[in-house]
Amino acid sequence: MKAITIILIVLLVLSVGIENEGPLKVIEARTCQDRLGALNCIQDECHISCIKKHGKLTKVGCSMPLYDCICLYPC
Image 1 (cartoon, rainbow, N blue to C red):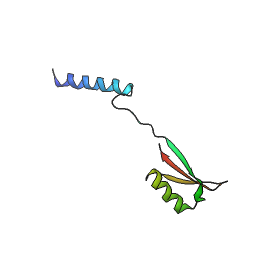
Image 2 (cartoon, rainbow, N blue to C red):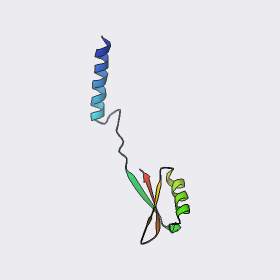
Image 3 (cartoon, one colour):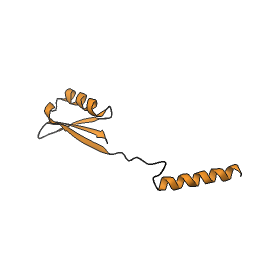
Image 4 (tube, rainbow, N blue to C red):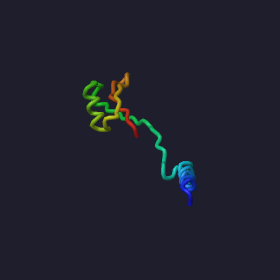
């Protein structure tokens, strides 16, 4: 077989696999949230606790009425 034929067959197999989310599954990024209410939104403590619990990609926020620490992290 010629090289071009082999390449076309491989591309066909991969394109069918991608369409069915087979061998090259696409990952969708979702954001989860966790409330750490005991810290009363002290920014440094909240940030350190969120990173320890959920990793370096964690973002930190505060809920205004209750002043709870909120960790936003990729699921």
